[in-house]
Length: 319
Image (tube, rainbow, N blue to C red):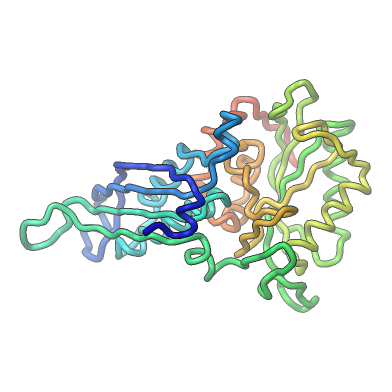
């Protein structure tokens, strides 16, 4: 019988994905790659894609393929159960629209005495079951205690912010934004990416953007941090335009440590950043920021080169 989530969601199928990785309890399994096969069912609402025929309105299975392959090839676990669960975590982090996943992970030619072609596991979980232990769940009016406002003596949480500008003095606009963020109580800038010039996405009849990313530590909960950012944008003179339109300054929260939120006003991790080279490339400059996203540098670099806007990305200098 289908679960309520399955009844109200569409399904994306990935079948027969093959990759080689070093997973197992025996010494030779940790030294030499073995073949693994993955079948996956991904449940998500794809209704927007029916009408738009736009990649942004569906789950990008090409990126998910790279994410699964990267976990198998770059990490190492003793148990296939753990490997399968980490793959689930990675795919859930990939897109907030994904509500449920069923994975079948097969290890071909497992080292057993006897005639066995393969061994494997099949796991089916919804988003909450997988992310509950290391995330903060949110409704439109409540924030989990993990991300409620903290006292000044607490260390706080790390968050990744993306900055962009294509109106006026672009670099100066971004530097002013950094100054205002630094002056905010409860926000400390830990690291900054390089500065890049990028082609506009969506609406192309406008000036090129300057883009960068920063890693901050904050004692603010995600909603208060979002509010502070909006105040800074407004104080710098940002005017409300249309989607993908020109922006004097644009600051987005891309990821907030151990937090998943899906509300009308705020979605974390940011639902589109994995398809945007102008966000991925600056994040890849900062290994500590990559860690906050829950991904790894190899995967982010692959996603960057696969993004549609990658060819228009140009290094400018320091932020």
